[in-house]
Image (cartoon, rainbow, N blue to C red; front, side):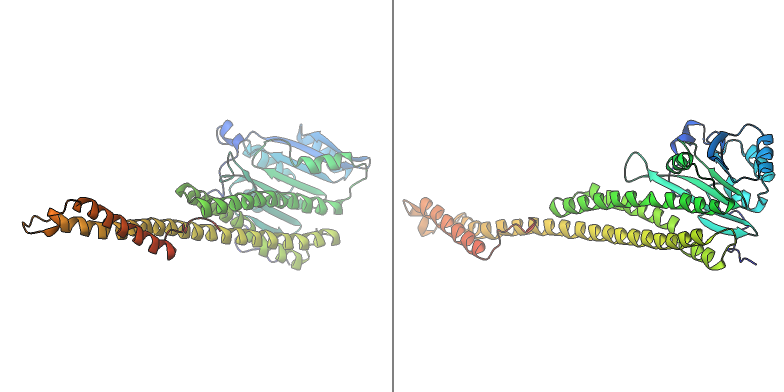
Length: 366
């Protein structure tokens, strides 16, 4: 008897969406239109066919060949629900597929394996993320994918590879396709993390050279993106290992090994997110240190000016007094003597401070 994840049979909606809505959802008033097609794994090889009626599914079922049902867009929720009922999907597992956004999860019930994950990508800028939910369900001889967004083709790389293959696909091979689908969604995160890492390196260089408040704001935005990616990866870390230990009968040896590698992939993604979050913290600390150094440089400059002009102010104050008996007032060249004394004092003070290294710019990179 398989042990379910706590709360698996109830809808577990996110408090807020992990990222912004996909662009298509805005165009179509908040819900993407529904498109359904099939990939039929016949004896002559996989072929793609548009879904026209329920009779098509009945005919395919009589042929007893593996089928990949691909649903994109959740506008027609009732139609999708009716289709899932015809395919024998348990209602408790169908509900999370039709009510996004759900938390990432991997759950099993009898001979049904369900995976809910989010496809993340960058928006207009690298500091904003766009997400859409992808639900995958594996049953004997049947693979179902439900995508919240209908932008482009469903898993184009894997689809082209399957269509170009002429080998027959058996029921047990659907678990490998499920593994490839999840792996494809997770692999998309590595280029995103690499782009964030490159942007953080550039930010760190700018912060050390010329700090600006906008750089600190960008750092916090990148940190938010990393937190979003981490929250989407973290639940899978434990659930995939649970799936491998339970020895789900739908998964063959190759798929089980693939899911074990996927668990390591999730660990690697989580570790990279933590490293980049630490880099964000380092940039914030470097920004505070750079701003502090610049403030110290300003205070040092003011201190130098004050220390140079303080003796000059003293001399000017002394000879600015209005006493009648002041011997120097009768000197013919007293004015020039006073100015010369000020120059000598200022030059001596400047030379002394220079020898002590006060004129060195502490804000310059070395």
